[in-house]
Amino acid sequence: MSFYEITDWQSNENTAKATIKLDANDPLFKGHFPHLPILPGACMVQLTHHLLDKAIGQKTTFVKSGAIKFLIPVNPLTEPELTAQLKFQAAEDGSYKVEQNLTRGDLIFFKFSGLYQKH
Image (tube, rainbow, N blue to C red; front, side, top):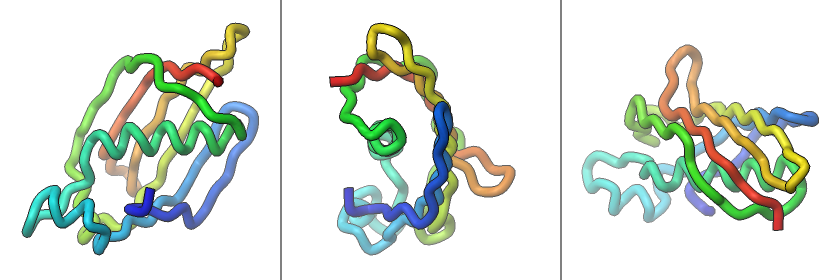
């Protein structure tokens, strides 16, 4: 994904925290929407997937979502940097329950919970 860069990464057994720098010049933002760029919700969900794969060092498949809440639109011109906080719990069957928030300070832009399966 070229619309973001991870500029800071911390992870341990069940959590990860990333500083995400958005590239407002990426073509993604020119089409969504012209004159008012907004990070698409599908990209926020995909970001969760990428961060989980990075945190566990393995590829996963998205199985299903729980709650998905888009609380505040993310404009890369006014919010060029976000914090992604990921919590994940492995089950014996190789699945992962995942929760993620995208924030900046006290502002929460996106909340997600879902289930992924290791390949």
